[in-house]
Image (cartoon, rainbow, N blue to C red):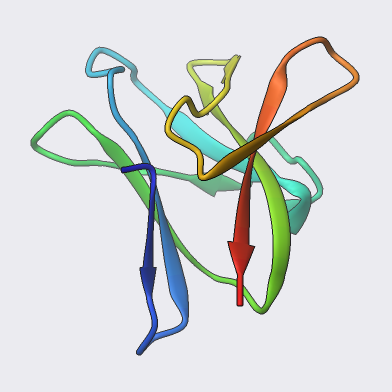
Length: 94
């Protein structure tokens, strides 16, 4: 699963798996003005990268940036085409 919601804390955990050799992974989206270096993700022992963010209600588009390469989330709850010919993940918070 790519997104885990913690209803008690109000935080969302974004998870990227399948890039165990990546040195640095960042989370970029409309919640941080698509800044590819603002939200660094932590690497876990299982090789996944994770970041927790407090997000209020709404729909948010996002992508991962693994060693400088923009990566779509194949496990995103929803996806939407972007102007670059790829897709962004979409997460909705109620």
